[in-house]
Length: 126
Image (tube, rainbow, N blue to C red; front, side, top):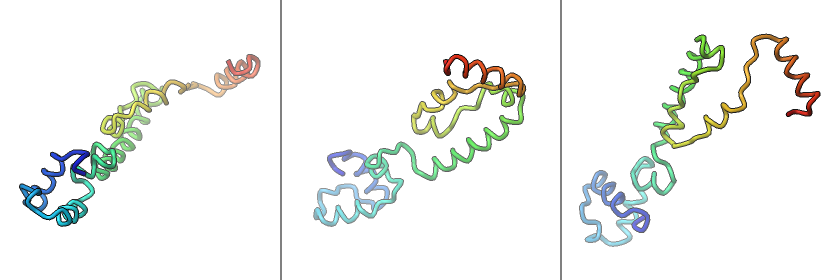
């Protein structure tokens, strides 16, 4: 943990245990204290590769789903325009949403779908 981010470990030890100079303690005791830190501590988040705690991501996911349900009820949602940005993607720096929306096609009627489908069958999917 010290090699990964000593400053984060120092902050976590000070915040959790009021230990301001861990070097004055035996190594084994510091290891026990470090192991006992909460999962959302700075150092544990860094070690796990997360930028925000899991609880925050879950709350953002719930908000994203609610925003999408509301968006579906709007005219933009029915036409597939102006989809709300995902909070989860913003928090995790994930660019997947933009890639997913590239292949989205919306049809106004069953006839439009059948016409495009026949075109794709004739041209071999191009």
